[in-house]
Length: 247
Image (cartoon, rainbow, N blue to C red; front, side, top):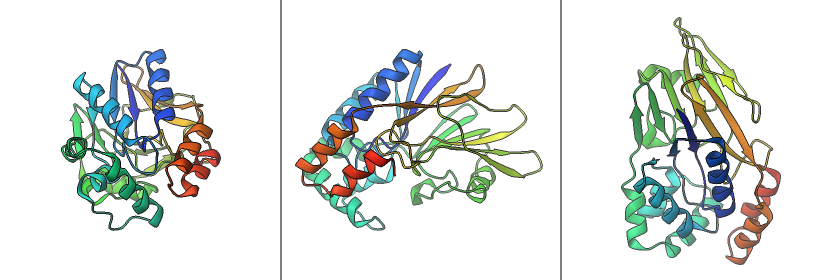
């Protein structure tokens, strides 16, 4: 099965639509929305409604920390820009849309694959998986052979051997990376709506459970249009600028 995994969409309509079109053309048979549908971007209503329709049609949706903040109003621990964007987002969303976000689950287990937004050892606390030591905590906390998360906005893969050693790998854009039968893996998907790895193109993970590999698909989109919307909405200017530089 080919699974399209979209994380950290962040209310970026242009990136979201481009990513969905790309995975459709690639032949994705299932969609996973890995959290942070909202926050930072200018189109929270559109992204929430599109996501709700996808989930109603069989996609899986996971709760992200920005989704939780928009649902509850709790912005503790967030940067000033993130807090400003969440306050604005709350004003755009209806009570029903916020309730939809609040009811998204923290995790989804599908056979040997565990999906979470943040680190699997404590997803409700929103830890980042950035280093081998972070991935090791996931390996130690959950039995799943493959754990998939987002949250960092930077794609990465970590492998664990039977002896417990963990190695990290930076996947190349649009090139399949193997998932070995003898190794456990943590996959960090990168971001659809706000990449931070220096590449402004939207990032989607395509997981092929038959070939046992994962491809970080990069998709160009009209980030300038999104940045203009951010400016018109009165959101912090840095949120538009970082779309252009991928940081």
